[in-house]
Amino acid sequence: MAKDVLCEVNSCKYWAAGNQCNASSIYVVSHRGQHARNSEETDCKTFEPKL
Image (cartoon, rainbow, N blue to C red; front, side, top):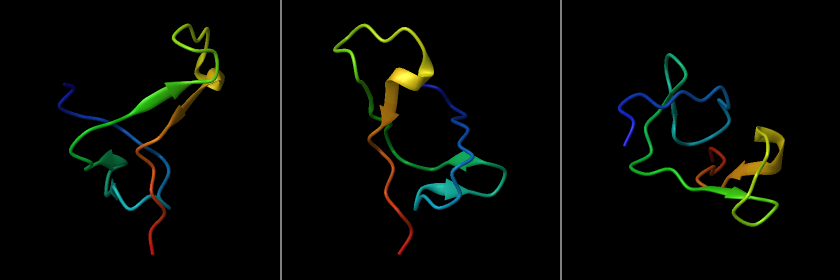
């Protein structure tokens, strides 16, 4: 797994200073089954809003 996962979504509870993601795992899904052609066809399911 990547050591440094960057994320600019500072409204996520896993966001940390320096745009670091501190989630223990990352789950990304595609809108087109297993064959996404670009980043717009994917979503990060790991996102959880800060409370």
